[in-house]
Length: 137
Image (cartoon, rainbow, N blue to C red; front, side, top):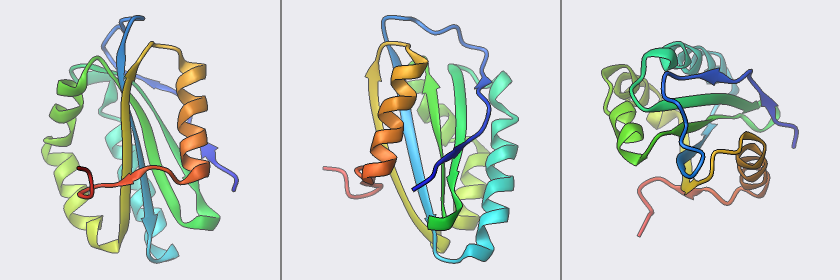
């Protein structure tokens, strides 16, 4: 599988090199026809990054042949990620697309090392070891 990645979009938060919170999302669309709208929605959200409290940065990614898109976002902590998830813009996109595919996610805390973070995220996406949202223990 070939994964395409956007440029890094920094946020306003200065990362603590000791620990950041990383979130990897993986949306598999049921229909190819939904991918352009999903991608546009992702880029609109990415445009908010410079102003999001606690946002360190984000990459968007896609694997079009597999109908998969998502993000690898880095946050100052899990609370900042939860603030983003609660934003009206994010909630609207989730409402619009949640029934058009499946959403998986994985998150962890670790040192701020972009190369290591992308490497781990890439391996997770290739291995499809993200856990389905809602199925967490």
